[in-house]
Amino acid sequence: MSATIKRERFERLMLPHLSAAYNYARWLVHDAHDAEDIVQIAYARAFE
Image (cartoon, rainbow, N blue to C red; front, side, top):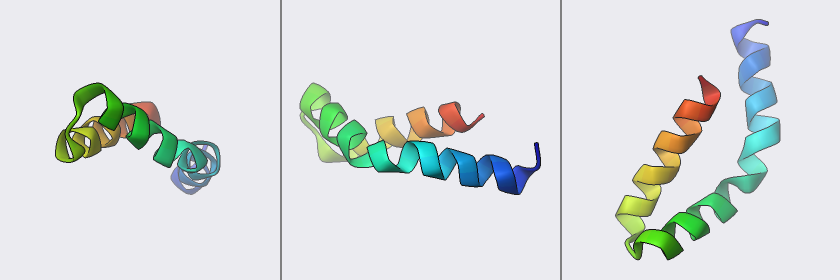
């Protein structure tokens, strides 16, 4: 699978859930900055 196709597929499947992932992380840690970091790490790992 090419990198472009992989990126497009990931964005199509995962980006619609970005807001929900952030809201859940914010609820768990009660800190906006930490929640952003958690979601960024989770999405990077999912992409790999």
